[in-house]
Image (cartoon, rainbow, N blue to C red; front, top):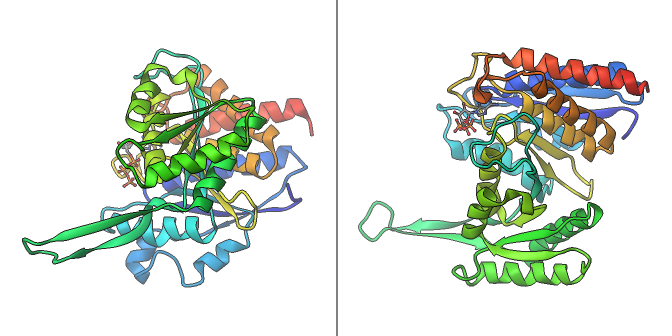
Length: 359
Ligand code: ATP
């Protein structure tokens, strides 16, 4: 990691700012205790409120401003007063696409002390690697004869050899480095053009990694296997839509949205990568101090890992587990602790760890 790491902080809407506060305090603690790191954090208040005032989700040069940062830490975006297509297609998607964040990386790990409503298995520990740039979310298509009895719609899935291949290569490299297997989610029995092509390209990548065990599984069966035998998966590779759906199932498998982190990665490092919780702005609990900050804090840990500090990532994840073992629970986990209490308890465990390491 560079001596001074620049981080663009985008808290967003709803519970975004509440959970982001806990993550920022954590980074400030880390730089106090670990003299090898220093963060320059710049906060941008681009959100739905900004849209209502300015008619756009970010300033015209917003992406240019973000470009110069080492990483982007994002909270959540969504507000009943702004259509979802606006927040998604004028904020999240432009960042993912402009910065070539073609991998969405989502750990599905059951932390000790968390009860899963879906499985008794203790060993749930895999990652979903989702193609994040094209596929079903290519935004290609249109309507004809709208509002008439002849109305018709076309929604195109665009998959390119390059796009599939780079996602597959990332998954196989990750599996190889971690001694793990790859499961590819497909539906080539019914979606016979795009998903067949997906299979062919993924199989070409698989051939180049003979040491990595590989299987392809139809996505409907895979959803059932997630629940029936989640311990058998290590790296799940999926297209944009399948990965999106499987990720929420993965979240539910390990204790809910309040916990699950994600990274939108530009593996080449040419552009900043963006780290965000899987959950959205949760307007039903916003402003009540009830939100679980774990997903945001864990996303911050993924960011530090991406920036070359796996040690700090591991310290944070261990601190989260320790905090849960101590009995801390926000409402979504069946307890009464506030966002701030959970955040502080995790930071306290991180500080203890950093003091022990004494850097
Ligand atoms: P958005 O439109 O921004 O996606 P949403 O309400 O549709 O918002 P989420 O924000 O993901 O979707 O929330 C889904 C459910 O999970 C809500 O009931 C919400 O309260 C709960 N939830 C999400 N994140 C958290 C969290 N960090 N802590 C506690 N509960 C959460």
